Length: 459
Image (cartoon, rainbow, N blue to C red; front, side):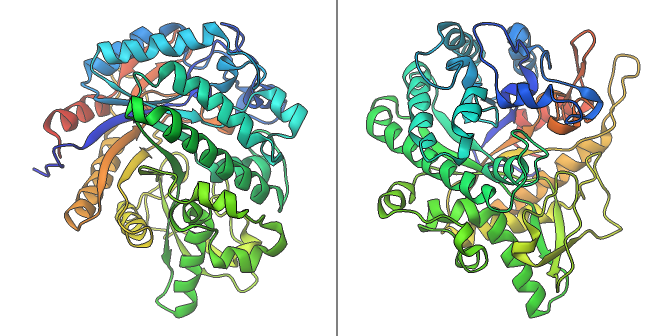
């Protein structure tokens, strides 16, 4: 039996646009994802999150599902446009009530709420009026929104995450245009990322000053990173892998844990990479009580020598011409339905990289999961491949803990099948199957399996 530490947190995760639906109900304003999903050709099969999993109406049933499987913690995000329909101004009482009721329901069932303030669904008005995350005024606007959340929910929420995966917002939203707001540029990702870091720091400073002393909660940010393994042990491939990791994770983690962007980014991105003021740096450095990481896959990295990097689904390389890194997969690696390679040891190596580079921070895996081609048969879903994936990745996480990494929690993506962004409903990541016609939830084998993991606190 691989027993995890006594205080280890086990949970599942979701995001507002992916599950809530009720897109024009309860006083909610439009978000950039509402607009993007309604733009022809942007989402596979023309799917939208208008109804999604109808969690807006079914949250009590969903919490009952969580309780049934013995869930200890649930990470969800707040839709900013439910709280402030235009992104600014007076809060919407119906939006506050929805999340307040959800939090109460979770606590009534002994489930700790972990709240993400921003999981990509920016109020549309802020995009149209201010150019969204390109605008230096956004950090203050985000701080004001965060204050509403701290004020209304902080008496019951002990774990806050400011942003989910700023890399995705920046690269896929402002660089490759495959996610909302759908912009294509080689400079805008760096501008957007810069304002997100400033916004994160302002929200954290406000929380620590005004709310944390009374509420005793903790606050951090969640970054995502695939592992990059050097293709050969040549010096150039080792440097390429390191560079790829610094462009991926270092971009957002270095300013928070080390005080500024990685040197390699400064050298290569030059004038397109904005500079922090001394005041920014002071606010950003140390602005996380824990290190949130989402991890799914691994690729080999080699010196590109002028070749452009191949794109995996959602282009997991970033702006390749800035990095000169060629990414490849081992043809023997099994893949998920996303086309992502299954490489459990990549997680352990990434955890060690974080541990070394950022001086042994407390780490929480805020997402890890597997997309499978799930089918219902006799009211059951047998997802052996997902169970194998989770078991193998958790084993590597366990090994990292044994080797001294300060890993404190694991959140499985996802509680249920949901709207997988540009891929619509074509991809299933959930441990509960969702029939989108009837909205019926069916626990998959993995839900029962994970229930046992949590009950036994180990594998």
